[in-house]
Amino acid sequence: MFSDTHFHFHYLVENNSQEFGTEILEQMAKNRIYFGLDIGTKCSDLAERAQILENCLEEIPDVNLQSKLKKSIFFSSGIWPDPDSIKERESCLEELRDSIEEFKESSSCFSSHLAAIGEGGIDHHWNPSGPDGRNESDFDKEMFFGEKELFEMQLELAKELDLPFIVHSRDGFEDTVDVLRAANYNRGIIHCFSYGLSEAKTFLDLGWYLAFGGATTYTKKAKMDELIELLQYVPKDRILLETDSPYLAPVPMRGSENNPLLIKYTYEFISEKIGLSVDKLNKIVDDNCSELFKLKK
Ligand SMILES: [Zn+2]
Image 1 (cartoon, rainbow, N blue to C red):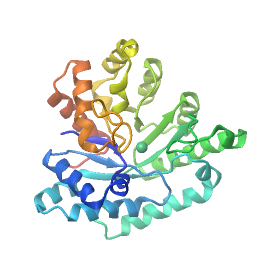
Image 2: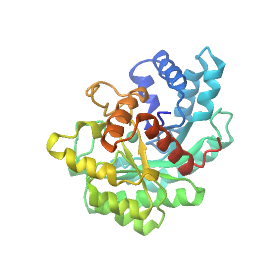
Image 3: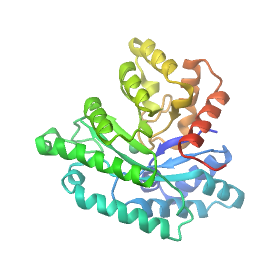
Image 4: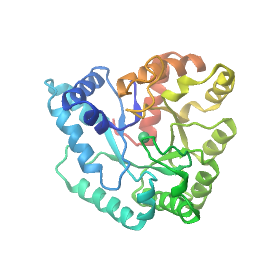
């Protein structure tokens, strides 16, 4: 239960401590987490992220909880569209490829748990002081082209490796869809879905799953009817939930650091809006994770 298809675990450890990471993992195992996906953003961060998680996991005293986590936690690897990665996209993609190959051959307890490529995609939200440091002045025609090309190159890699893709798409619906159509690979998740109903229909028709995060719980009263219509429109076999930890903690924890345990608030919020019990929504999301990631359990 309480699957979480998107978190950045190593930031929780970096922002706090290894003990904090261990505590979070232990609680996730006690809550019987079914599936958790640790998300990559840099071309060569996979091995290090897995190592940080494994270090925390090994500190959990109960070996049954450890083995539960070893079966439930998976990793993605991909390149977030920051300006440097866009400029160096050819070499970045080579590095991504190499780091994936190395990881699969490594002695990590997660070496067989690379489950997706991403997060990658299109971001036209300009916030130079935000964690992503994106600034419109860094983007000219060549950079817009490069961003799309970096996204398409990663979709090609996902296709080649037969893995789902984690799409990051913010304020860039049209460019995102252009690339998806060009690559003709439509398998995976539109993460932290932040568009409206007509955009949802386009992604769903192409074959994507939509993942809703903590920001869904911030919806203003005036927009609530629209959100409910959207949530009710999404077919039950295409809905997923995520935290994007450490970002975007759901209400009532909005403003604090997010972590995968807080996902229960998003489950509570969405299950109420679509008129299902939390248990039923848990089961639906777990089943969708099994289907999308071909989990053998
Ligand atoms: Zn993310």
